[in-house]
Length: 88
Image 1 (cartoon, rainbow, N blue to C red):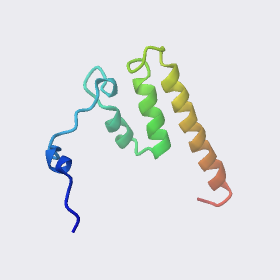
Image 2 (image 1 turned 90 degrees about the vertical axis):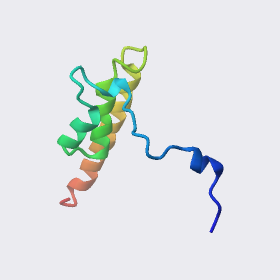
Image 3 (image 1 turned 135 degrees about the vertical axis):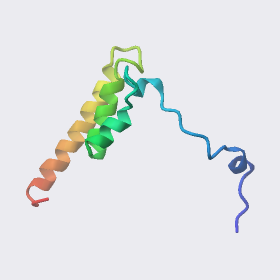
């Protein structure tokens, strides 16, 4: 068995993940909770998270995040169009 790196043991694996502030709404609702509650696909969920954080992460008035959301919405549309003829 391969010996584990010293960094493997230095990493605190039981530490709770802290959600960045730009993914948390005014009342404490997290973007991930919204995505899970609506049972969104990967690309729709990523789009929603980009839109929810767009005014808080970068200093570009949300342009970068909105463009990323549009990309993922286009991926979702491509999947829908591709699967439409298959009855999926």
